[in-house]
Image (cartoon, rainbow, N blue to C red; front, top):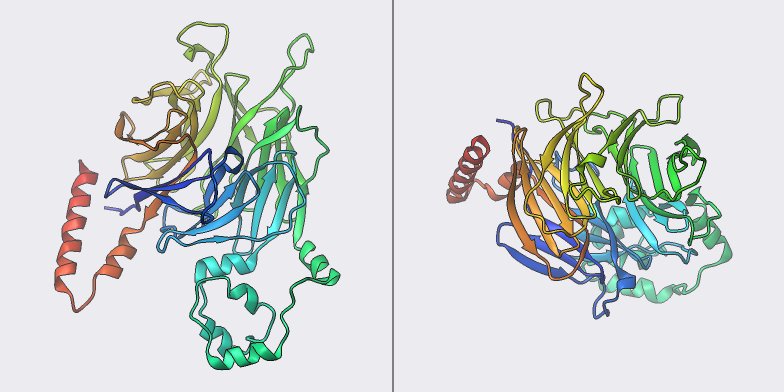
Length: 455
């Protein structure tokens, strides 16, 4: 049977700036201090948690990118619980919306006023992934360079006496020259820089894949940009006017790329949900038309038959269970009333989608974030957090949606991300030639996992 990575823990960010790690095996919660002895405040709310490696279904994640509302960005190591801050040039005063890592050198950050910037932080990302030793740096002959000061900020062995004598002969620069600052600013690419009034128009969400970035927000329809050049690739046609020509508020609350990048596929389908309309719109950016390729009407799901339709807060696309690694065949949406609904994206005879069903175990709190991972060849694990301070884990198959666990986190969560454990890697690390008992224990664990997958 094909082995799939297993979730071992969940990272949860809350409204007051705390990062919590929930161990699923020990059923324990631990607070990770991003900055030591720092007061908690809603202005320091965590807005995004994203892995450095976007393809998380085949390999286990070791480092995560944590972004806060007050422009602070951190790298968290799941093995050592070390947290390192990323320093970058920022002149924007509006709240930070999120941060994504696009490759080994660059990250993308977005602000509420619509500004999207690609920033080169190669040194910080290399330290997070490879963590070079200071002794190796000295052997390379770069111990007298100014870059050593940034290397010393990370946990590394203490330098030798020879290293100290060299430091005494060179004066450390405490301020940067104008040429150095201009060189750093050349590493910042402004992908989108609008002149918005944040009270009427603001950015609320963005999502990146390969070399494309999709953005949307309040009174700002879907736009797609090229991350390498900053050029516009797609602009959705405005749909916030009715048949009388009256303009209404449009609020895109989440964006999701539909497709898989595991086999170097370049997805061209985008799904958006809104807080102001009961529709899920799917766009094809390769088509010439700017209208949605598919509109999923969910107005009939309003059970209380009130005049206010359902509003949707988050999206999550799921790959096909029958063909692992293929394009997504289903979509999960969360509402402000605490409902999570699974949709089948395959068109029927009447050009409509099928509603697979709702998830159980919710008490009415607005859904904040939804993430998923493939648990086996027949099921997905769905992770969600809501404003009622609960983190829920569901198992979804083709016919069932079962609530596995419900965890109380004491504070209102804003985002989450599962920590995926690579079974093959953990098995190779624990299995040694000298310890036969550990190999027997690993064999027992694999038998148990295979039985659980078959059941």
